[in-house]
Amino acid sequence: MIFEAMTVGSFLSNCYIVGAETTKEAAIIDPGADFVRIENEIKELGLTPKIIILTHAHGDHIGAVKDFVEKYGTKVYIHKEDAEMLKDGNKNFSKILTGKSMSIIPDVELEDKDEIKLGDLNFEIIHTPGHTRGGICIKVENIMMTGDTLFNKSIGRTDFPGGSFEEIIQSIKEKIFKYDDDTVIYPGHNSPSTIKSEKLGNPFVK
Ligand SMILES: [Zn+2]
Ligand SMILES: [Zn+2]
Image 1 (cartoon, rainbow, N blue to C red):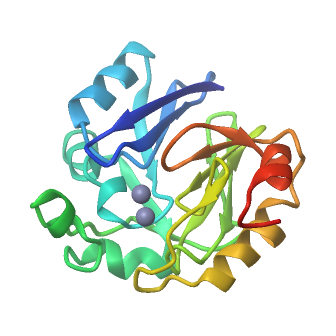
Image 2 (cartoon, rainbow, N blue to C red):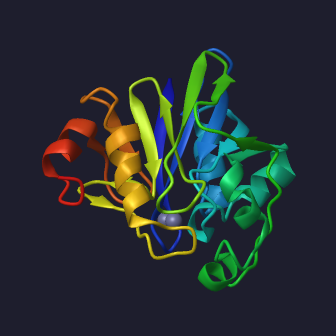
């Protein structure tokens, strides 16, 4: 697996590039802004941007989606319960956050436990509502990208439409913490962690 993390845009969102060694195809997780930087990184890694998987529809995670779709025909995946938000520039906050309203029609609407194959890679979709209704975590090999659900020693905000504190705690405890302790967590903002370290030190889920 080829893996690269980058922080993009003024909200310091994490964008992850996951590439298949066999086919040199890339999945981009949350291309939030800075299309040219992400594109250059993908080129340097010798990859083709095949699919985009969004952890949720908020404006700080979707800013470069359209550029990839228009230039490369990259296919967009999002959980079905965030699909409406993705299509609506007011609901996804792109207008407020970036000044530019974005309306994106997804190619694939995901459900819990879906699997996406890309070359020799298998992406497992874990529905983790609480930050948004259709928030997901994406697990591939020993890493999990957790979007704005679980951060290093913190959790995502639950005061946006569709958010729920009870649900985010339940998602983390029941759907994320059941994976191996040594699974590495790559969140939507800030630095990585591990499931073990979050079980021991995250003050919100003790
Ligand atoms: Zn968010
Ligand atoms: Zn965010």
